[in-house]
Image (cartoon, rainbow, N blue to C red; front, side):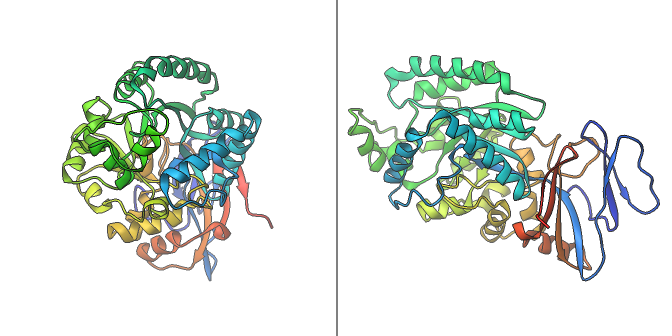
Length: 405
């Protein structure tokens, strides 16, 4: 993803799990302590080595809830999901997160940018030797809750840091405009930056959210009123309101961004924020598409994610990339970038993963495709692959998944 495809090439990974060399395979002898992965070009198929895929947004602690929350009304869907979430025991969250990591590997995903409220995904990544950022969520829609919510959240963040590894990083996530007050946003992002934590926020996800923030009305407002809270009309778009509280910067991934307008996009670009785009989830919940071409045209760093299995199952980032291609009028290569090098840059890991480049982590996926003659044909073929075409997944040179014989 950082140059033209190399026919008959090899990816050499050193003993520390980093890419030592990407070169012609023929005639080379690998040094002691290194592993070499070579594709087979025997017709009528090719084996293609590509960088491990990057999922720019997931909720792996919800693994196992696919197909169990079916409401079309989004606030009702959230309420049902929260009920199921509360029924789980802590050990069940951890089991779900572990399975979610393994399921990701089986789909060729080696790095995740995951949001969750239990800390289970960071622990699972740490235990399994996985790669990614686990953004720990904080909630509190009432302004009077802000101090207590921040204190409890900050304490939990401190606890979770013991699970960090060179490949598994803790992040911070003030959840969404309908679950976080303005003061809590301001305090949470200040705390995250003091602790040097990357930040992710759900924003501009639906017309309901815009109605809530701008007018203090709609389904989210009704839900809060039923809990004794009093939503206010802010007269701003969700993006503008979060910016009013100092949220956006180069350390922030804005998740969804379906309802952004030109002013919102310009603001995000000025702040240097990135975007995680989830086309299939956006369609499932809101019958809406993000303005992907405009986001990319503004120079924003954009990656594609899956959201959770409760929204769309299975978590197939290449299927998301194919949908994004249609929305953005992209080439196959540009679509693939949204789940490799582009997604890595969006979540701040562009120097570590996303391409088969010397010095990056040796995260490599092998897929089989019909024999191709041109780079364009190859990109088309790789973008069209699915789990059945995946031969193996390696993470730092360590095989973490292989297709059953």
